Figure 1: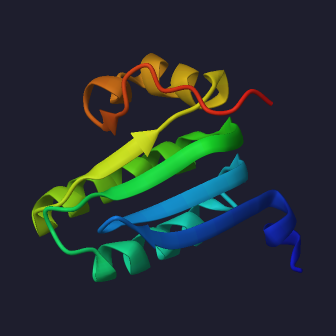
Figure 2: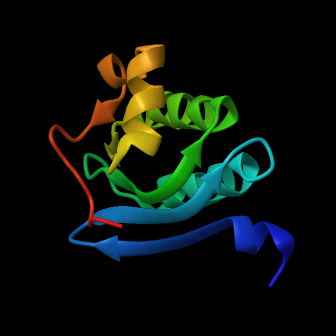
Length: 117
């Protein structure tokens, strides 16, 4: 396991025509490129109009680099005829989305709260 694996765990699966990317850990300037790569792969295999589902319920920290990745892939999915559906979980994700206004731009699942941690 690399040092980055200890900071951010990512799993990609196909479920009911959607590609689901689950993320746990810290999403920051060091780990954001890893998530972007996994989202690139998810977008390559999803068949529109099925969504790419990004499960962020396991995130402890979301920095601006991570927010940039979310916005870039939101736009890419729209271009492909799909959408990036975000499952935010707790305040570590919902707070940065709300403060930046991205909760009004991105496809964030309403009232979704992940497993209590």
